[in-house]
Amino acid sequence: MAEDVDGPVYYVISDLHIGGDEQLGQVDFLDELLEFLERLERTDEDAELLINGDAFGLWEFTEIDGLEKFDVLTERYPELFEQLRATGESVPIMLLPGNHDNDLAAYDEYVWRLAEYNVDLVQSEWIVRPVGDRMIWFEHGHQRDPNNRFEDFGNPYETPLGYFYNTHVTSRAGQLSDRGRYNWLKDVQAVTPTERVPHWLLSKYFYREMNPMLRYAVIPFLLLFNISVILAVLAGLDVAGIWAMPVETADAVLAQLGLVGRAVHFVLVVNAAVAGVILLGAVPVYFILHDVGTTVDRFGISETDLTVDPDEPYEEAAREVFADRPETAIFCYGHTHRPTVIEVEDRLLVNSGTWLKRLHRRDVIAGLLPPVFYPSYQLCVVRISSVFDGVAVEYEQIEKADPSAEEITLTERILTLGREPDPELPERSVVTDTLPESASDAED
Image 1 (tube, rainbow, N blue to C red):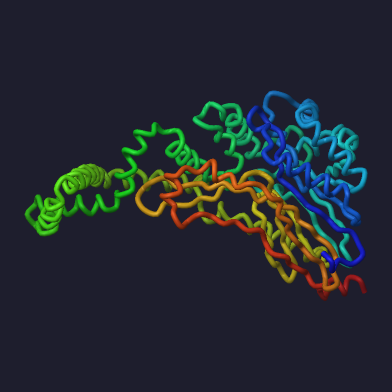
Image 2 (image 1 turned 90 degrees about the vertical axis):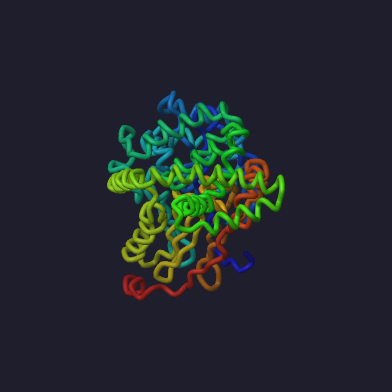
């Protein structure tokens, strides 16, 4: 930061998703957000705060409409809005609408309501800001997502596919979350991509909601399923008189172990019997599942390389912007919740991440057990400034306790031993101050 030259410094956050029905109204990072805003209030930099979309979860309010949602927000989080007012007296605060708070673009009343708290709402899909001799392009990013794109931006009556998912799934989860063995269902909004929601639900049911006695009864079978299939095949060969040696050898070894050997023998026999039954029905089931999978793929709702890749449409969008506006050094967006920096044609594609909890899928070390979803927080602020050698992008980590200590069970830890995630924010990157030839030609 000591390398900064004269000029504005931009602090960027996005995807706070503050608000929503019942349990969705719980803001786990409120203290950290207030502390950051207080610190920004005291800065002596020529700074501007840009909230790059989805500041609020207005879609997740399903029982009220219009400006009533804003009234609920100010009543529920008075300390936040008062701190915005205080910070905005020292530092300009600019807010872009996202898909979850599309109402901000749809109703002009939000402009003056937010202005009361020194927040400048820009009802636009994108804005640009100068940094040194270059420019930064800001947009939330949902207009590049066909499931959340508004053909008529700012139309309060347009409802893309993502709207129905959030009003019928996410909001309902917020209403039901506290009925579980612990309050986990509200975290459905942290599952990305949404194609992983069925896997996440199965995981949480198995490790959290299933009757403990039933869970620990089926874990040995599911964990040893692959071995059980081999045993079932070998038992079949023994019964058929084709090859008896493996079974006879195993029986002889286990017989020498006494009571322990008999217990192991019993478990293996039961597992092999169940696996044998499954194998008998596997052929017709395989054809049925194959047909179902083909149908699901045809409708494009399964988790595929195409749907999971969060970067491709934004790389293409960045190339278009860089071509049309060669002076642009940074394309900054949110929406996907994944803090990343990607070099695109000697310039940078920057994602501002999210302040929501993030979930990291990890498959178990063996067997057919459900995957484990490790939670983490990657609260971050993207800082963009002009430096002597160009334009610098830095991620500041906002410290918050690791939620996995409370949310991941010992069983889940054992089953994913050695596979725990260690998420890290991108390192500092710089776009050199050498303008592309096309930009130089345009200036001439």
